[in-house]
Amino acid sequence: MMIITAQLLNDSKFYEKPILLYFTTDQCKKCEELYEQMKNLYILSKYYAIQVNAIENVEYTVRLTRGVIPTITILTPDLKILGIIESVDVKFIESRLRDILDDYKNKKIIGLTINGFIPEPLELSPFVIYDTVNKVIEGEPADSRMIEVYLTYTNIYKDYLKAKDKIKFQDSLAEFLLNKQAKINVDKKYLANIAMLVNYGIADIKEVLELLNKDTGEVYRSSLRENKGILLDEALAGNALLTAYESSFDENYLTLAIRIANYIKENLQHEKGFKDIKGNDDITNIPYLEPISNAETAIFFSRLWNITNDESYKSLSLKGAMSALGASTSNPKVLARISIAYMKLYESIKANQVLNIIDSRVEIVKDNNCEKGKLYYDGKCYTSIHEIVPKSF
Image (cartoon, rainbow, N blue to C red; front, side, top):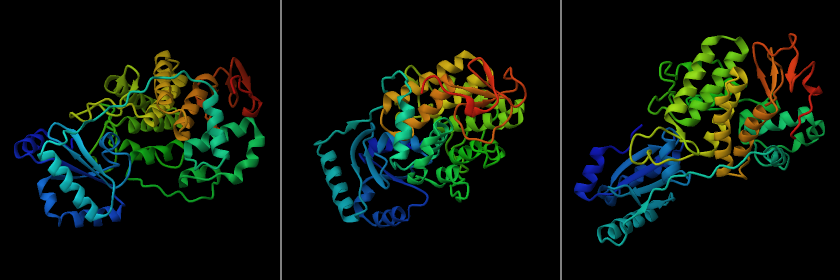
């Protein structure tokens, strides 16, 4: 979605009025109250003020804020950052808006250039798995991907189940994966949330299909249908389609997943990873290789490689995982996703029917060269996943 149009930039330049972006979210009541107060300020009339849904328009949020909600970001007509205000104190905001405008008019500030984010890729190693598991058992609030890695690890090293009661959860889905009695509470407006539910067999793929352009492979970010083609959403939708394929072997789902893969390859690929969006203005054209999105993309391509045996998908998976690791070697949410991709790339187990177990190593394929119900790993067939000892961790 284009927030800043050419007309807005022309008007801003002609009238010498800076652009004020007010970042908020759907459920932020204090944000609404604050903006209502701001509209009564005379100084606000000296700016072109625009409210931005920080979740729906995440490509602007990552480039123009630190993720704090609400945030006010002031831009020049040539898209330099004049100031960022993180406050809910309307008097403080009024004072800062006056100071920024005066300094801009008097040419005391010219603004800072909006920077992209292009991390140097790092080679993968099993340490990402160890670090993720350690973070989980040390009490770091865990999301669903972190719990997935932990459960995979406990399938191999059962002593780690003793730490189960120490685990803290970031969200209800993570808690559900460990304790099936937990109630899941997610906003199903957003495709990312729906797709994660599908991945764990909790929602129907039809809800993803409603937000997918079957011709182009683009997916809408939410039921608002205001934004589309975000890397994270593409990867998660692709993963959801692969999950649907693995549970049914319906080739239509695989075809659509490959269409999403092609969209990512053709529109979001970068020399050092994957861009968060294709780009449709001077802000979103600035390359930003967001780490969680790249790691989720690595999972998607690693699954496609396991299912299709197309080596190009393995290379694309490594590209995303190495970019994500280069961006963050300590964030457990990023490391968890890299861990899952790593296990699918180097420790993959191929089953020929759905297993009632959470294990990141497993992919379901039509023919795994084993008898029905048996698992294929490293050239051999196994009866139980608990018989399989990984080589690398």
